Image (cartoon, rainbow over all chains, first blue to last red; front, side, top):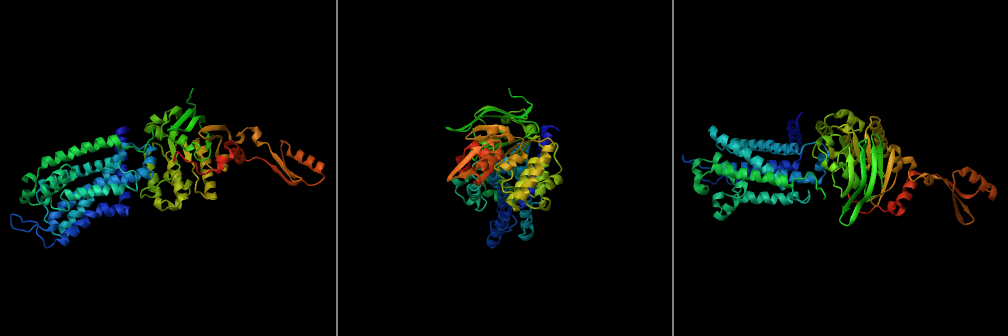
Length: 272
Length: 294
C-alpha cells in the first residue's frame, strides 16, 4: 500500500475515532456544538416582537430569520477554529500527541481526522440550526438550488479554513489549562465585530473594515446572502453580497493557516 | 564501530541542558532478544536516555543506532517496529479500552489480536469502559497494551509498573516473559530492583549521567560486591568480616568465644545492596532531584 493511500485510509479511521470522542465530551458538545443553537433560541425568543426589516412582499423579517445565517456562521467558526485550537492544545499537554508521535500514524492522517471531525460535527450542527429555524421559528428557507449550492461551498470552505486556523492557533496556548482562556476571547470578539450577535450594518465603518480583515465577517456575509431576502443586500458594505470577495478572503486565510501550521505544528515540544 | 547485530547501540552519548550534562558519555548495547534494565536514581538520566532512543529528544553528541537507524531520522516504517510505554500515562480522550486498542492496532502492519492483548493485560472486564474512568493501575495496563499491540521488535518500558499492586506486578512479569519468549527485545527502566532481577538479562546503572556499572544482572558490581558478610557483637563493638565461607567463620567464632555470639548475622548482599553501593546511598535516599526528562 502506498504512503498516500495509507495516509488517507488512516485519516478516514481517525475521523471516526475523533467524532466518537467529540460527542462523549459534555463540555465541547455544549460550548461548541449547542452554543449557536442556544443563542439562536435566545435571540429568536427575546426579540420575537421586533422586526429586522421587510421583504419586497411586505413580510416582516423576524429575529429568527435574521439571526439564523449569523448562527450558522458562528457554528462554522466554533466547530473549526475554537474546537480544534482547544482540543489540540489539550492533546499536546495531556500526552496524546506524544503517544501518537511514537506510533506510525502519519501526521497528515491526524490532520485529516481533525478537519473531518470539524466537518462532520459542523454539518450536524448546521442541520440542527436549520431544522430548529424552519420548524420552531418558521424561518422561510431558500427554494432556489443555486442558493443551496452557494451555501455548500461557503460552508465547506468556511469549515476547512476554520479548522486549519484552529490547528495553527493550537500552538499559542502555553498549556492545556490555558487553552480556553486564550482561544475563547478571540472567537468571542470576532463574533461581536463580524455581525454574529450585533447587526453588521449598525457597526461603525472603521470597525467593519477591521472585521473584514478576519474570516468570520466573510462567512457571516456569505450565509446572509443565502438565507436573507435580496432586498437586504442594501445593508451590506458596498451594497453587494460580494461572493467572489468571500471566496478570496477565505482562500487567503486557508493558505495562511496552512503556512502557519507547517511552521508551528510539532507532535511534541522538542528540545534542541 | 556500531554494528547492526545490536538492536540498540549507544556510544559516548551526551545530552546537555545549558551548563548541565544530563548524560555525560554513556555507552551500551542491547542485543537482539535480550531484556536490558536501565537502573539509576531519579534525575540520573535514565528517561533522557530512553527518550533519545525513542526519537523524542535530540542528543548533544555521540552515536545512537536503534534497529539500525538514527532515531532522529526514524521514519514511520521505523516507528512501526517499536513499542513505547512512556513514563507518564497522560490522559486519553473519551474512548474505551477496546476502541483505543483497535485504533492503534490499525496503525501497524502486523498487529496482535485486540482481544488477546486485552486478556493479556487482564482488562477483559473493563474492555468497554472509558479509559479515563479506570484506576491509575488499570490505565497503566492500557499503556502497556498499546505498547505491545503493534507486535514490536523493540519494546521500551519506562517505569511500567508504577502504581501496580503486587498481584498486578506478578501478572505483568508473566506477560513480559511471554514477550521475551516470542523474541521481543526490551529496554526496561524501573525503580523496583526485584523487577529488574526477575525480568532483566543485563543491566546498566546510571548515576549523575554516567554509566557506573554494566553487566549481567547477577554479576552487577563484580564478584566482590556479593561476598557474604558476617556480623556480630563482641563486647560493645560491632565486628564485621567478609568471607566466601561464612559457615566456617561462624564455627570458628563459636569455638573461640565458647558461646553463642551476640547479634550474629550472615548477610548475602542483595541486588538492592549492590545497587545502593554503586549509586552511593546519598542518591538512593534522595527522591527529589530534578527529573530532567519528565
